[in-house]
Each structure stands twice: as structure tokens, then as C-alpha cells.
Length: 185
Image (tube, rainbow, N blue to C red; front, side, top):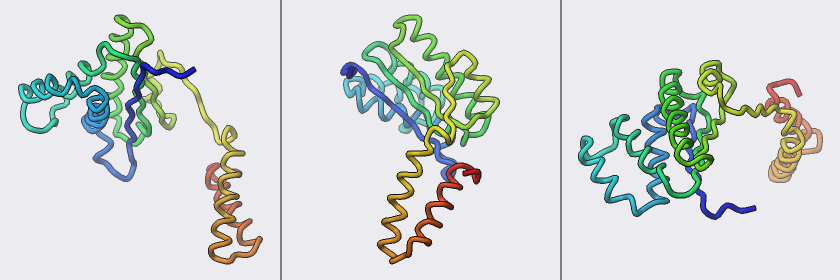
């Protein structure tokens, strides 16, 4: 079944780029996508931004208000945040608190139309903030076959490119798979 009346916005927090790991960065990234999907809101949102304090979207309070606006009504909306564990606990708390409240408020008005997916390492503060959420734990065992196949293909490509023998390709496969499993493979 394909949902034609739905949209997805997402944000990826990068551990090696601290600028992506703040609540305001997450909100701005989500807003850019949401606005791109709803260009009819641009004049209204621009006016709200102008009234809210300047030429750029730097105030978290304003970003939250704009996010509330773009999420109201309309189609189903899926919001995905990946790598939230890369943010500081303060930023995690602020973004989770806001998004969870937003989704709960919208769910009262339009049950099931807005959903939030958080992808993260198992951090106690995130788990606590998401107590009412459904949890799906992924372990390396769930992806073992896919990882082995992917690594085998790339080990062959590397072997062909650098004229490695089979033993060297096996070493590449072995070490890569072992590291993918946290060294326990």
C-alpha cells in the first residue's frame, strides 16, 4: 500500500559536525524540508519570521512556533531524527520534549496523522523521554547477512582494483565484519 497523501521530513545529527547537533539546527533542517513541501506557506511563515526577530532563523522559540504551523492540518507527516545520541543531553531533552509534545497535541486533533521516529543509541535520557513510545531494538544479528554480503562484494572490488589475492580479500572481509559487530563477530 502506498500513501500518496503523506510526507517525510528528517534530520541526521552528525557526530563529527557539532553544528548539526543542536536543537535549533534540527528544527531548522526539518523546517526547510517542510516548507519545501508546502510552498503555499512561505509568505505566512516569512511574515512570522520577520515579526519574530530578524533575517535568519536563530531563535528556538520562533523555530518551534513555525514547526507547529507547518505540522498543523494537511497530510500525514512523518518526522525522523537519526543520531540523536550525538547531541548533548540538554539539546536532546529540548528537541525531544518539544517534538513529543507537538505530536501528542496534534494527535488529539488528528489521530495518527503525525508520527515521530527517533533513531539512536540506547541512552538513558532518550529512553526516559520516550517512555510512552514504542521501542524497536536493532542488533547486529539482525543485519549480519546483509553486512556480510555487502562487505564480500566490496572486498572483491577492492581485490580486483589492487590485485589482491584471496587471502588478502578474506582478511578485509573478516576485519570489516568484526568491526561492524563491535569486534565480536
